[in-house]
Length: 283
Image (tube, rainbow, N blue to C red; front, side, top):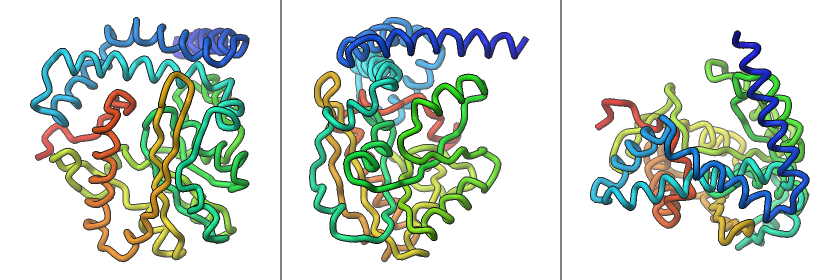
């Protein structure tokens, strides 16, 4: 039964991606956004997004929350529809602020970012636009056919499959740094074995892997804020966060969370509110 469900799911996704690939990028993105903002707010996952929004913005009224949830689904649908067009987007639709920070060192760089805008542009943009080979982690979907399909579309830029209960992904990233390649991590997800650090006022289990690796290899740390400016136009702003290496783990993660919070507050609808970021009893 599970196999049949996986086959059906991957067939639907494959069909949608064929449609998206046949359309110009603007029309594909708009169609993807329309589909998910029409369906998404009615799915059970939206309850999780509502709970997270209520925790992060306790004074926000219900109308604002529903608008953000709808717009979040729109952004998510656009990301899916933009998969077949990633190369075009990073070559023609992405501007980078403070890109001189990429030219100040020949050493590997530890990039940190969040699930904002279309985070899938990060690795291919580093490779295609700046000749920086960077590796990042991803958790494979449970559906192996979906995994193969998405992996093919994500083929520009290195990705290392990580099992949630294995340290193999972290070891692979360490090997990448040792061999002179950069790494790029999305650091806004829950990591059960991490450090409890306040995020929007509530303790959230947070991985310090990026910090440990940067300290070990003495690499620069660059933050990357991604923004969807209008339709399929994106802006990436780079920030030199190398000073985090000089702080204790807790101090560095607190500072990092302050930065992430400021990015999310500027564009709350562009963050993925569907993650289980906080434990149920976090205080």
